[in-house]
Image (tube, rainbow over the protein chains, first blue to last red):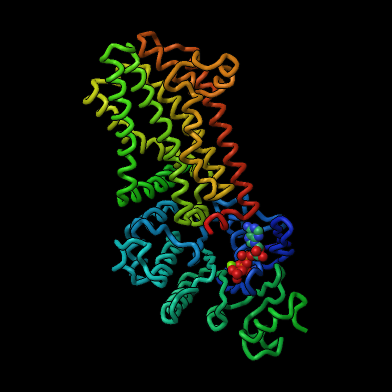
Length: 247
Length: 262
Ligand SMILES: Nc1ncnc2c1ncn2[C@@H]1O[C@H](COP(=O)(O)OP(=O)(O)OP(=O)(O)O)[C@@H](O)[C@H]1O
Ligand SMILES: [Mg+2]
């Protein structure tokens, strides 16, 4: 037994002739906030989808919360959750209707209390009866996060959680994520193209390029190790150098 | 199998229907138009003494056909709704199983048709003194086998949409109508050329509608027809489940659940 929240061994995913993920292995410990970085098309979303059982891997072994994915999908999915601004909740229902449906899908007991406390936490009580499609992107992101917290997940998978948010809204979301980690010891595995955010939020970065991991470690250490000024500079250098990595 | 999750998926459809004028009218508009058209037509044919019995047969066939088509459509459209609103990812990262998802769609077909069928039966009775319940106890097995076949067709169409995305969505409105001319719905199997008959009889619909015509003609419900209908139903339903499971695993291998929505 390990206390790893996520364990990926020799994961490969090919779509026809495209190799999206090329033999990657990594672990994420419980309570870590790991930023999964890499240029467009590196394979980040694909990896998250595989961890959630939405995509079947071509090869490799995956364990989430100690259980095999996708074989033990149901047991895993009741204890994790996912959110991305690119995967909105149905626009044709009101916020409370959407959240009620998902609370039921996650088998939340005491739905009313839970929804109320999350509404207060995210300051969206005033949007409760509004149609989801009418929300601004920032409001939508917060409602999405409420959905992602309904089942009190032990791991939160977030695909570009602050994309499309104004700086203030993004900051609010980051503070909430930090709070979740501190108060509940939640594990967060997320992607982002905002390097300042990554420096502020993550305990560790995993850098993916062309489906391979080319750097893995605490942001500050990785930046230092490669002699770069900051993560932004590191990202640009690494993205351009290709998967040989920096020398 | 969790009924809580199955109910949650149906609740989502109910919420949607409640706030969509188009979806509420859809429940009544077409069924009622059909009923008016065929009702008056069969009144004309019946009262002039032209074709005895035809009136009742046409109306009965119409109501049962509508039942079949609406159940199938409700299933396919409930799936399309999740596709249109990009909700499949949200749903499939919850602990919902594939079986629960399919059962939820079938249940939704039942919920919708119960509302429409009640209305249609009432209107047919008031306007045409056509009492569908004269079919009495015979109605139950006929309708049951009809609904099971509608589940099978709806599930199969959904599987195709899962694989080919919105470009296949027209199937939701068109495929079932293939059975209208070839399902012996409004006329008996004996109308078809002899070489075609065995081909048609591999589907449950001709058996069901032959059964209905027998009952309307005052005969008892023919049991061979019923056995055929249910036997074929079982085969098609299991086939549809297997097909859906196969298409779903294909979609997961190709990453379609994420791409379908783009
Ligand atoms: N279903 C699919 N079929 C074929 N190719 C796919 C599929 N999904 C992803 N790919 C390809 O796999 C590679 C990785 O894509 P992925 O979406 O994981 O990248 P990403 O790191 O999330 O990029 P971005 O930062 O742009 O979101 C890309 O080359 C993409 O074109
Ligand atoms: Mg991505």
